[in-house]
Amino acid sequence: MRDVLLGVDIGTSSCKVAAFLPDGKVVAACGEEYEVKRPHPGWAEQNPEDWTEAVFTSIRRIFEESDVTPEEIRGVGVDGQSWSAIAVDKDGKVLADTPIWMDMRAQDICDEINDKVGKDRIFDLAGNPLTPSYTTPKVIWYKREHPDIYDKTDKILQSNSFLVYRLTGVISQDMSQCYGWHCFDMRRGRWDSDMAGDLGIKESLLPDIYACDAIVGKVTEEASNRTGLLAGTPVVAGGLDAACGTLGSGVVRKGETQEQGGQAGGMSICIDEYAADPRLILSYHVVPGKWLLQGGTTGGGGVMRWFEQNFADYERNNGSDRSSLVQLNDIAEKIGAGSDGLTFLPYMSGERTPIWDPDAKGVFYGVDFSKTKGHFVRACMEGVAFALRHNLDTAEASGAYVNELKAMGGSANSILWTQIKSDVTGKRIVVPASDTATTLGAAILAGVGVGIYSSYEEAVDRTVGVVRTHEPNMENKEIYDRAYRTYLEIYEDLKVLMKKTGSQK
Image 1 (cartoon, rainbow, N blue to C red):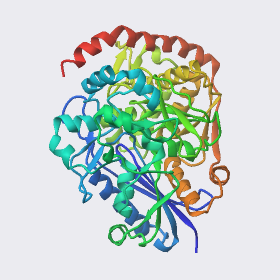
Image 2 (image 1 turned 45 degrees about the vertical axis):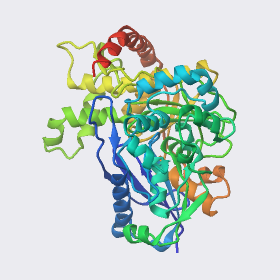
Image 3 (image 1 turned 180 degrees about the horizontal axis):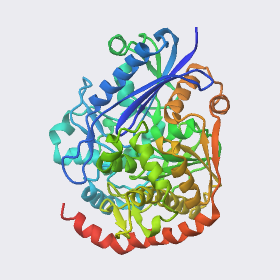
Image 4 (image 1 turned 60 degrees about the vertical axis):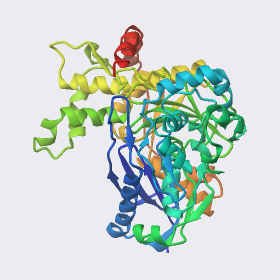
């Protein structure tokens, strides 16, 4: 009988479930989509039970549609999107939809608490600025706007810990997702009671912290009936999706860097010493003893999803056997570097690093009668690449220099887009063999937890290969250097207007 590891990824727009052999080969994979609700400008929330149903359906499909059997599953790892605030009562009932990482409703709360408690003091403890994206202000928003929910809440969970709870009945908080809380001591890796009190957060809401590869529980009879997994199958704590994707792309050593091409964009640099920068994001890696210095943007692969959904009716309905996204890629490839002066700011839900501006807006600059759909598609790709460069430049200014990026996520499947990122940043980009890096990272956590791998280095050596490498085209980089300066200037010139219009929500 084979040893099979199951990796579960709770993304922003869909979940993915994949079954891996210990050598990293995918033997089955599927996924289900779910809704992002936007009831008001600046809000973005989801029903966590939609994740449960999507994940459980996907696991059942693994067994129904492939030759993988429940008896072969040695362990389950779950990763998830960051900065949820899932309020559950003592019976495990979800009390409200959770604001997700794109949600910006709590800016006023952040402004008030940064003044009252002290933004420098908060940053010194947590290693991250207090901004609306994080878990902390969302919980305080519950307390102020919905005290009925806050008073009934027993624990606040993250996306992966919620699914682990639904699988095992055990409440947990993995180490890599603790960075969403500003009462978490990033240097010491533990909750800080004094800061929790000063922030006005009940310490009882904070779950016990587990190592990401720790077996927190086993699949219950109820979860077995809903998923097809054998009752008693081990489930590890799991971790942050970006951190699991970083692991699944082969980043386990100091200086190695992942480039993220999922719904969100950005990068994660592996470091072995505490090194916080208020312009960036600092979290623990899922690999013990390592941190990740991250850039996280709201505009990544989701930009192309947005463009395809709204402007690709022709490509979807022209009878081609090529997908609409591939056709958009084809027309973008016909446009030269720099998109003939069309520049795009991918601030599609405000922006996170490095500008931390919830009022930032998406902008196309340089539109004229000569511009075609291909120009707009390529400008979208280039804008996301400029956001990546902005984060890399910021990291390098703080002392974290990067030579090579390991690409992951759906956008890494686009040779054009990956080459654009290489040209814009001037960095070599390596694309791992698996385009399921995030679920692979979750599966590796399970593999370490149950003893299939003796170390993370061994796991990566066995599972991660390379399918292609992109070297920067320096002629294109000269063009992009000029376009990048324009990109930065557009935001600087418009940010006051963005703030003014953002306050009119």
